[in-house]
Image (cartoon, rainbow, N blue to C red; front, side, top):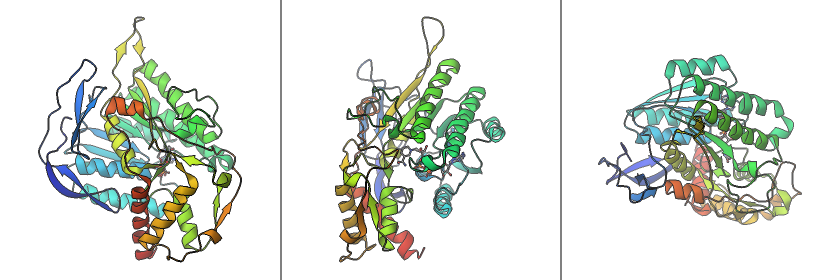
Length: 412
Ligand SMILES: NC(=O)c1ccc[n+]([C@@H]2O[C@H](COP(=O)([O-])OP(=O)(O)OC[C@H]3O[C@@H](n4cnc5c(N)ncnc54)[C@H](O)[C@@H]3O)[C@@H](O)[C@H]2O)c1
């Protein structure tokens, strides 16, 4: 993988509130292709092993101007921190409205983490506070900063919120995404990567969910906007030859995650003595994906832009791909809750004698909800040599430890 460092052990922090070993130092060149389809070998610096990829890893992220919208949102902030720590040069622009869908101080905390990472980085970082729906501003950012790579993560997330607040989904996810596509059309980029969602699979019965499955039956407005993003991106890839990759994320969790998500809101409720509601009487399965796995997948995908090719009709074959990124091992919700409880006790968030049974209520399924999500991640594995590996206990342990430090020790 051109420009990445690997080979020498070095200790460093990654993610929020965790510490791990990665390999840094010696510079590596790409490996040799071993078959006509294998165009590149990636040195995965997280695991210090070579991975063969089916796609051409045609983008070196070093030296590039990378626009990440939705940073300092949860996934965006983790992505930007990782890029600041691991790239040797370039400019990263975080763009976010800092809206108050959830506690803004969490976004401010993540922004402070980004700024800390930027202090020790050779990569420049700029934060722009703004709304994607502001076309003039988006155009100005593209005209002045000329991003080479765009990662569009800004969106109004959440399935349940879309039932009461549809307008904001149209504004951020449809108009906002359209503004990004138009800006990419007028200021060509090397790669547009954007967040889609597992929710596009709706109530599909066939599992695991494959990107080859039909996804024409969304059960929430949120899902409909995400599927629309994929359709709009396809049209723009075809018409204007914009290399684009959509990523269907599956229930992402981790330290400093989103407080509207179950593991986080349940922790907040239990630690303040309130009762948690368990939907569909606990008969749910979710394919949970730890944040570091998501970031690893995004960083890999960013480097492999779909190739521009011309069809027999002389027009572009759309340089367009969509992948699932999900753990691939759906967890029963009740088992997930048991593991969360154990880890909250272990981390000292809750006492050992906490009455969990007395603080849970089994309730019916909610509108917009689906009983199961389960990612088929073969395409990602085949094309990029990567599949998520971080198990639920490890991931929830990191969350619980972070929660203790942030709220209890930090007296928030
Ligand atoms: N976290 C998950 O489990 C998950 C699952 C599937 C898909 N996704 C998608 O991944 C992306 C990132 O999700 P996240 O979990 O980090 O969410 P997040 O809410 O933490 O981050 C999204 C950020 O976008 C910003 N934003 C929203 N509307 C905006 C607008 N109009 N202009 C500028 N900024 C705006 C918000 O302020 C927020 O900081 C989203 O597109 C989301 O739909 C997330």
